[in-house]
Image (tube, rainbow, N blue to C red; front, side, top):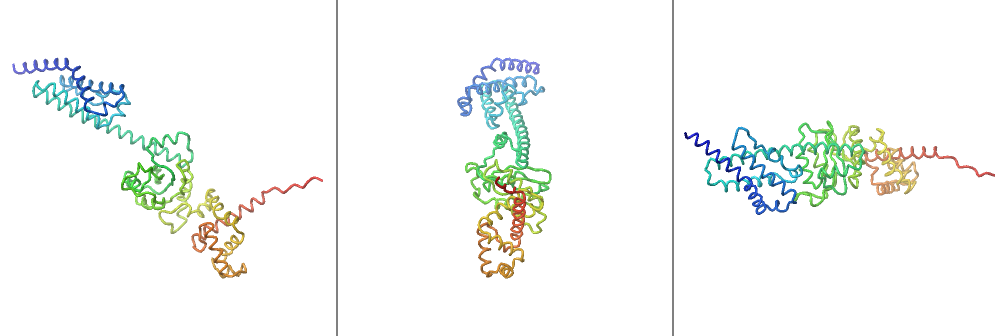
Amino acid sequence: MGKSAEVMDKVETLAWLRRISGDLATVTIKRLDDTLPWYAEMPPARRSAVGLVAQAGITSFIQWYDDPASTPWIAADIFAAAPRELLRSVSLTQTLQLIRVTVEVTEERVAGKGEHLREAILLYSREVAFAAADVYARAAEARGLWDARLEALVVDSILTGEADEELPSRIAALGWHGHGEVAVLVGTTPPQFDVDQLRRTARKLGVDVLIGVQGSRLVLVLGRAEPSAVADDAVTDLPFAEIARRLEPGFGTGYLVLGPTVPALVDASQSARAALAGFAVARAWRHAPRPVEADDLLPERALAGDPLAKLTLVDRIYRPLQAHSADLVATLWAYLDNGRSLEATARELFVHPNTVRYRLKRVSEVIGWDATGPREALILQTALILGSIGTDAARRRAPAPRRAAV
């Protein structure tokens, strides 16, 4: 008899809940408008969509209360009535606020209907909250995978130099806050790669970063971050060489090569080409530092056939010296050919050793490299050889002047 009365009571409760479901939805929308500022600021279409979600939640609760075994409270079912753009624009926090308001309104309305119904509402709201969190977690995971694929595509486009008109929009979609100068850093991927730690370190150094993992090779595109995107405790305006040194622990063992600084992200492929070429030949410098700048590997890159390295050596060393003074070129040749001996150079040129010292100092002032160091001497000698080859080849290719017709 008691069980029959319980069944009748449940039937009456269900009928009552169905009668007031419309009123519950109306009161819920009014409460949302009064208590949640973000809801009041929504466009009308989205406010209507939120109302559909609230109505779906109330209807789903009634169905669940009728048959708990049917478990229709999954958040995906509740949000099915909402357009997809609403799910992207409403955060998890706002979703939980929506659930809380709906539960409060429902509890107030059913307060006199017994403790059993109140407990059912609390159980239902708990399951909805957990299910909503699961939906948002899966969405975040899917977004993370999409971002990773997009980031890999962007980095690959920069490395290959095959940038198209869609590249800026793809970079913007990744939340790139970089502005101004950019450099590319290439090294090896560590066995246990912590990409989040690398990003946190980059933010503290005041740079934005794009990360590409290509098998055993790890590529970072570094850009100066906008002031608004820099962390409060970030160190700003560090040279890229120092930034690379501080990011070095995030790479695996092996060589770490920093490409030259370029003025903007659209020019990053130039830095990437130099960094990749340097990474390919870094083992040829036995005592290469870590990190090493790609321009410090110009001789090795030139010997490996890198046209950019050859052009850089000629344009930055040979041509400026030749344009400045033929004496500087001759003195540098003689100094390097004589094993960097001041006396031997002076004898060959029939000048005083102090004159050789003065000219070598002028060489350093003109091009920024000091011929008295063994490593820089190699760079300078390679530039002289390449410059001479290019000059001789150009002279041989030059057409002979035509004689005027008599």
